Length: 218
Image 1 (cartoon, rainbow, N blue to C red):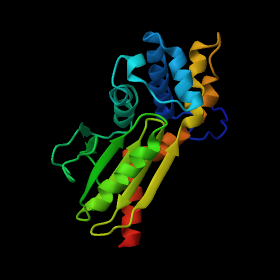
Image 2: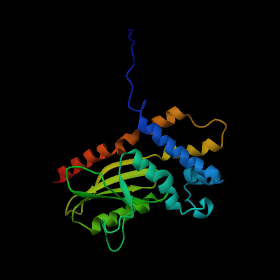
Image 3: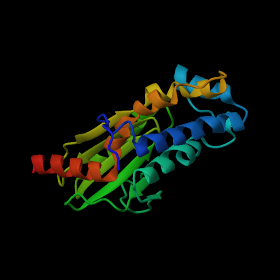
Image 4: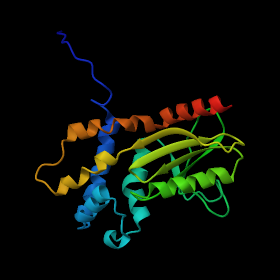
């Protein structure tokens, strides 16, 4: 039996999550090509344009949910259900999804708001409205447009909204159109390394982060 000396590696060198998330983003990009609208991806990813349902042949939010949000949540080990009627419920409105398997040591609701790329700020405002309109149980809010993911926590009976994690994959998304514009795509390895932040969004990591911020305020 021989032994060989190895050099230390970072989590990003062999991050299964980063690799799998890159596949999700690539499939998202490829879907534009399959629908014969690759230029629309470039407009969205690089020029800040909004997704157009007429070009996609599908409601933009449903498209983003199908190809970005739901696959990413599954990858991160979140069990979710969509349009959770009555749980929770504010002024006859409801969030886009809720998480069922979240354990942070405190009873809390976990809700999510989905927007399309380049409309993240609208989702952030809506999430803030949700959290400030019901100050009962502690609540965790996940806002995403599939590119940026921001998670906040609001303690029980408190108007204060505390940031837990804010991750933005915009730089990676800007590279995606090159899959259909060049003979050689972007460097996969270096792009995957840029996605190391996915580790911050894993369910267990977020649970620990929420537990910490809620204990600090308590």
